[in-house]
Image (tube, rainbow, N blue to C red; front, side):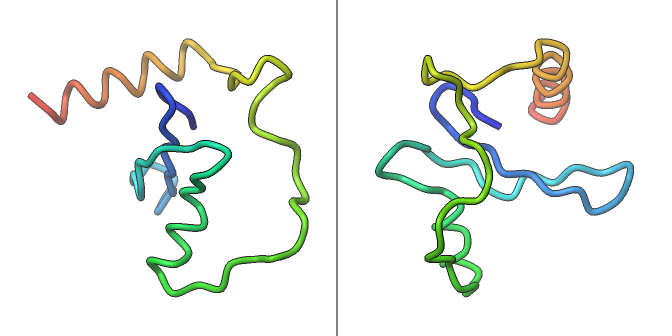
Amino acid sequence: MHVDGLRIIVVFPSETEVAIVKVAPHSDTSDPYRELAAELGVPVSTGPRTKPPCCGPDGEASVDPYLVALIEDAFLRVTR
């Protein structure tokens, strides 16, 4: 998920839980997935990317306003 130039990497420990694993800048020169792999001691793939890019031709990620509202609400609840 992208938010203001940041990549938010999440995992789902169960059907009712979401855990934020990493929040980091994401650009052509900064890859938070590679950083996370290095931090965890996991080998980083050197093969070609096998999925489509996260962004459209305009360079922006697609955003679901409903999901954004849910995430913002959750952040507000835990930061109060």
